[in-house]
Amino acid sequence: MVAHRSNASIARTHLSPERVQALALRAALDTAKSHNAEESELTALYRDVDEEQRARIASLQNDLEDEEGRRSEAESKVRELEAAVKSLSAQLQRVGSTTPAAAPALSGNDRDVIVRAMAENAGLIDCLEAIEKLYKDRVVVLDSARTSARKASKFNAPKRAFALMATLCGNYYDALSGGKGDTAARELFGKNSFATKESETVEGNKRAGTLRTFSYKGCDIPMMAHLKIGVKDSVAETFRCHFHWDAEDRVVVIGHCGKHLDHK
Image (cartoon, rainbow, N blue to C red):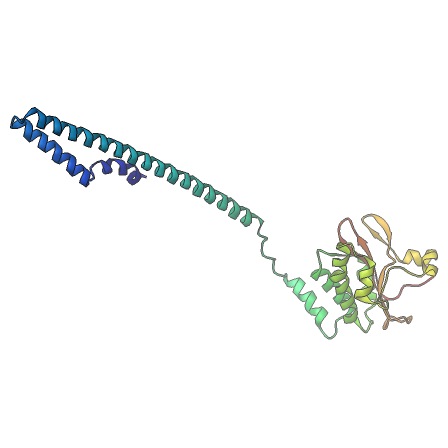
């Protein structure tokens, strides 16, 4: 800024051909005066000096106007650049404030739960707890589901059940969140692994209905939709997972995870 403001004063001392010519005319005028030159000769010199000075003034005015125009243009450009810098800084601050934090690492307990579910001797309770850890923002596992999973320790296909529950909390959850509903469920699970409701006989039986009703948020919620493996009345070969979709909190609520519940 100091250098910029100094340019105008420095320009005044600039030695140019026009400046040399003006100095030469003044020198000639001074010489003529000192030698008592004739009036006609002095008049001609005065006229030349006057014309030169007028031309010089006009040139300087033009230069000054040009300089003012350039300075104004430069200052306008500076203001534009400053505004752009402020805008970019604001954007960077917004990006910095909205960048999500890195996902926290799994706790030692969570890792242990998932490792147990992957083990050869994993039980149904291990798989259910792993699902809860893996999809903690999508699923609510009720105590009744844990109790039923522990009682079904003899079930011989826990990893098949794990795969169904992973689909329930994964692609099926996405379908429900997107408003696709049960049509997508049938495509994901197939009719042999998923049912939106129980038979009329079961739903019409008071005791059967009670067995499929679970306490959630202080209310008794019938959970007729379920995942299924097998049809035999056998704890070792049959699995049912009864659940409810909480559209308000956008979570899958698992109320039962274990044996086939009685029909009556």
